[in-house]
Image 1 (cartoon, one colour):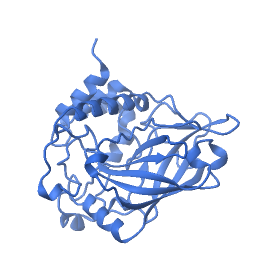
Image 2 (image 1 turned 135 degrees about the horizontal axis):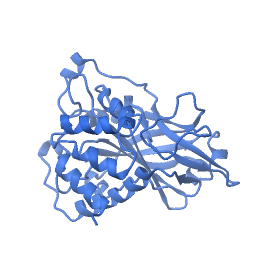
Image 3 (image 1 turned 180 degrees about the vertical axis):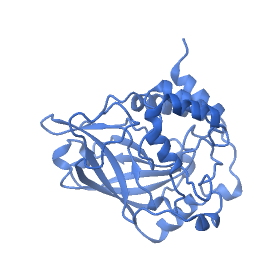
Image 4 (image 1 turned 90 degrees about the horizontal axis):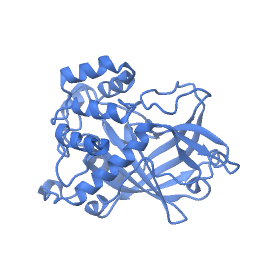
Amino acid sequence: MADPVQEAVDAMEKHTGTVQGYRRAHPRGLVFHATFTPTPEARPLTAAEHFQGPPVHTLVRFSNASGSPHAPDRGSDRQGAVLGLAVRFDLPSGKHATWAAANIPAFVARTPEEFLQVTRAQRPNASPHPLRMLGYILTHLHALPGIRGIVGTKPAPSFAHCQYNSVHAYHLVDAQGQRRAFRYRWVPSAGAATLSPAEARKRPEQYLLDELRERVSRERVTFNLVFQLANPGDPTHDATRPWPEDRQKIPAGQLVIDSLYEDQRESERFVFDPTGVVPGIELSDDPILHFRAKVYSESYNRRSSETKPEPKPADLRQ
């Protein structure tokens, strides 16, 4: 019987333009030092240690979600790319908690089998195969919110002007053991913004990481963490279904990007697994969330045993 994790990573390598030695997804990225400060409103909702006291050091990785490190930062002058913000909280206990979010409202698959199907509907140039993708959509109408989110993404002027969503549900667990389902989002303090087609046309194919590096060198880049709390009956098992916007939202903390991480090659050893939770936060019953952990692990195992191509001179800073 075929191993679904092996099948998924094989499909990513075949259909999304991956390069040996790189991550199988989100391969083009930069890691920054950051500081996370929780809010008083978050403390009673969860016993997780990074929400209980003073600020904690955090590593943040911004990335282009395409499978290829050479993919452009926009699909066209009117369509942007899926971008990611991943965090690793360095906890007072010496442990780490890790999350990964993206600038889309929903995922495009709700089971590992569907993930394999939609991956096989891609082409190595980071564009969908029209007939395969149409067939997937017609037989998986529940994926439309995620697909609309990807197609509707506009070119971004900066990582600092995007909102990043957890997509998956989790559970907050307070000191008394009470559980509450939630999703989270990182809201940019600079405000959400997009480029017009004319503005996008003036940008090089890959510009977002250079722009962010320069921005962080001269000003604070901050994001506000917001918990979206579920109502009874809201699904926690389906990453393709966003919850209604009228659900209660709690300000949970602020993330301040401080400086570029000193050794970007070393940072490639970090795995920003979205299932890396600690007591006080629990995983939901979302099968894709649990599956992602296994895919991340297999991706790490493969790239760590490969020889990564030497970077071009222009890429040495990354």
